[in-house]
Image 1 (cartoon, rainbow, N blue to C red):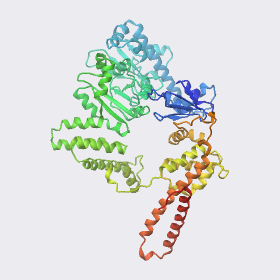
Image 2: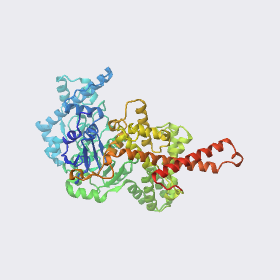
Image 3: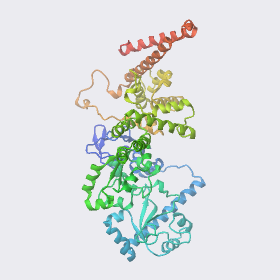
Image 4: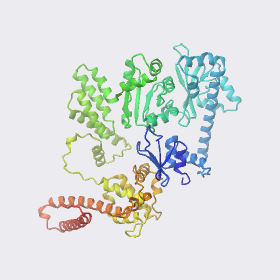
Length: 639
């Protein structure tokens, strides 16, 4: 939205102060004492040089308020009192939206009913409120999490809802009412489940009865607005703290979450007694890549710590575990020890998951080689799931030392597991699309672990910086007219490099070049805003980074001192682009020369006089001439 001014939008959430042409403040996405969050009113973008976050006003609202793109647009439209035209919904879409709205309204009604029971009715105060206070919950935290109580009445809530003209089928769909039209939650304390936006999506109910036959916890039925695989208890209250701390603490139960929040440890959520799911992991990753899981310190807790965590590694997240003293849980330990002692314990006893798993499993082997081999395979199974090759290699080094086995053994075992996974994905036609043997070989080349000393190449071609420079020039100055030829800078660069597009190595820079070619062919023009608002998040982030700088030019002009020998940097893109184009051409031509020279040297003797050989030599000589001219212009020594 062009109307939305970045300084106004962000100024609603944090304090900004002027620094030169930009504005700075403390980043709302991570904890910092020295401002590294920069806002550029001229470019209408923001960039934090501490955590790397950046974008336009819409991106800020999406990240800060955890909204989707359409929701962020509506948020800004409401702020600026702009009417937005939305694509007409189909009848099915209207029906789905109306159903969801109705279910939210009924859940809100039920939540208010349970809360009123807790605070205003004798049964609720005597049983429910007493229970919460016995757990040490203060009234403000009870109200914050909107806790409630369901009375022992058979159908009081259901009848109240029917009197309010709520649809009985919706009440059953939500699991508030049973198929026999009785209240589903009875004689239980109630824990509402909040969605990311704060709306009530379901409930959990805990019995206070000592009868072993009665389930301790029961949950709402799954519905169009509630799926337990997609829910983390307390996330709505924890999301900002998780961003700020860059870490999510994961506990098991509702009361653990509430106790920690009351103790001002607010970056905490619960998986609600179920095994962690891929959907929950993706939820956490929206806010941080770091998870700290707290487990009870009994044997069952240790076993639980080792189950199902490989998928967190697979999501390229960093996992640490903390085992509490035996017979303690987060709720009891924080209540007895206090916040500062609890935090100190977490910091002192946190362990990396892979190393923790290696240590625990090794402790049970008693130097039995068969058991040790089993542990090795178990550890390899975890390590092989880590997408980042550098992380995998470092884990292998540390685990090999802990297990007292040669590093190459773990490397071989890890590569075998990865190869088996590739075969499986190829067979199942997975998202990797490994359709051919070449695809498989290329994917494998990127995945398998290689010892550092495995590479024997003395020199590896790498044009990253030259390609990056071209991409940055296109994004930042592409729409400007260059004094070199009188055309736009983008047109000049594309004309000069059109024969080298396929030679770009980095996929992002190649994609940016191709985007520019497409825009030029469609005569729609290339602008900086095109890249900032691009639908591809990778291009959008690159554009913001390219337009941002942690440095500012000294204000010599105000002091009467100007640059004498050259233009200001932001006005010198003409010369910069000319030099960048020549540098990239030189790199690409050198690579081609090297390739042809090797081919010519290995040419069969009986074909040296052939026409094809002659053509290769002529091409080689022309490339050498071009290389020498470019090198001379750039002042580069050519060997």
